[in-house]
Length: 387
Image (tube, rainbow, N blue to C red; front, side):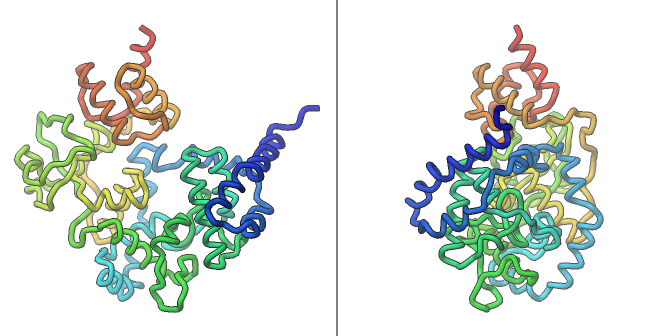
């Protein structure tokens, strides 16, 4: 009888750990004893791969993602936590230059203000993703960082629990971020980002943003109104203009007033020309250093606004649009590249390269150049491929 597929997977995984991973990790100055003890009971976790393929910030339509992010409970709890930790957050702002509502929004989005910090064994998760996941090289680096935490900071592998992707603590730091950005803010000698007391974790979130050049006193961005006849080819976070230039093109704030001059910004159309528009600024891009998803950065920004008391965004999303899976996006990337509009990779994620390729294709086909991937565009690409 042939072995079952999961048995074969486990055998192949263990062989990879012994013959390929171990030598590579030991070359990174991880001691053999540390590696062997940490990996002793680690097995392949196929459910982790499935979860990576269904990340909400990459797989859900923006309006559905924001509904999850902007629940009344999350907004209300954020305001309560702001009041509860007001003195701490104010001191953090003074020391790191990051506004309390942004720190609170990231805290709320990552772990529901510390309530859901994750219970997955992160070494097993990282090893699984390093073997078979998307961005395997990245997760192997994070696995090495986790082992460095075991080796240099005395973290017990069995106590290192967090998200399926290997993130830990109130702010869901990856192990490399713990090494680089975690701070001992309460002065007890250890940066405890996983303890029930969120002091070190909140300061570490602010430190992360600060070290990525957060600009104090500037918003992440704001909703805007586009004028009739706006050239959608100018949209996209890869295209930046001074705020004054956007104002001269007729762009207004959501309430109909003039666009404030906060310096350079980009027009973000998270649902394309039929959806809402935002002018996003430098701090928006800093948030994407925390999590590369533009949907995540928009969620953090809008949640921070709501925590401060702002009203929900105005207008309607194109909810009649068919949601695209990551497989659909991968097909779009493949078909665009085959048609001469190179996306520089097929990963199922719409980033700047894919947006540029989409706009170029839309221009060639006489379509609205908003760089937005949707079901209609996928059908056009399929039809062209058949002919």
